Image (cartoon, rainbow, N blue to C red; front, side):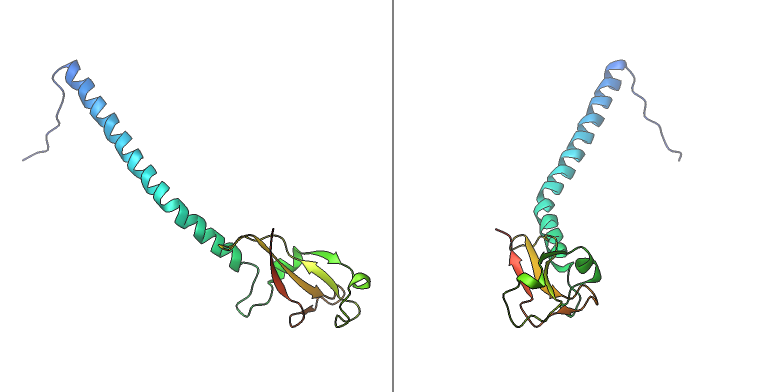
Length: 128
């Protein structure tokens, strides 16, 4: 038994077949779009979680990339906290996203040796 090829017997049948195939493609595209719409919030949430985790190592310290991308926000001479050692400036990371809102991390670092103080005013600041 061989495979049969069905051929339309008239131009009307050919047009009907093409129309049916177009409808099938449209239905498949709509179903795919509905699936994408349904999963979009989950994907957005996943991306926010990944962004929220990205500046931290598994031990809770900043990654080298987060430190490298940070900017100084207060030089040591203007810091009012007497517990901050000489040579340490206050820094802020770029903004990261999280399910709770966008945030930055503030910390003190000595720019000469790259040492970060993690036990003094190391905090996450939610953007307003």
